[in-house]
Length: 108
Image 1 (tube, rainbow, N blue to C red):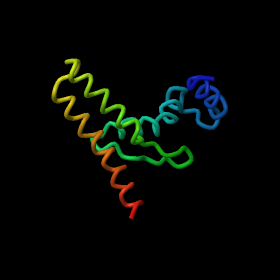
Image 2: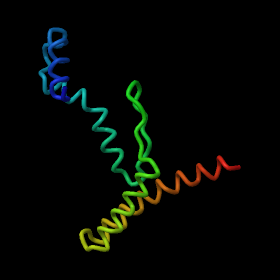
Image 3: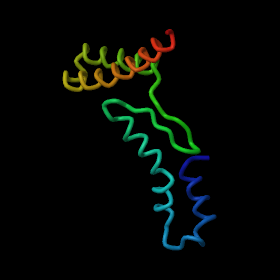
Image 4: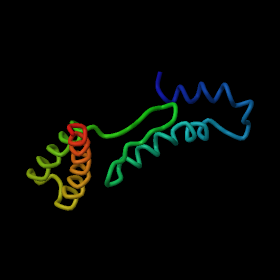
């Protein structure tokens, strides 16, 4: 079942209680937390975000390393410019360093 179908089914169960809302309003409400996570994850420091009842969202070290390699290859191939490359590298290095500093603290 896709997200749109789930929203429509949910709307059918609550439409009598909330007559001022249409299915699009309910969809925006349902997706708002995930849109917040999406926007927050594009910030330069890519914070880990916890949404009550849903879970924790963050970029793992392995994914950051893989993304860093991807951006390095794209830059070397001339597919992205220097500004984009440096901005993405800054974000990804921050994440990698965060994990490495946690690992160092756990060793001591």
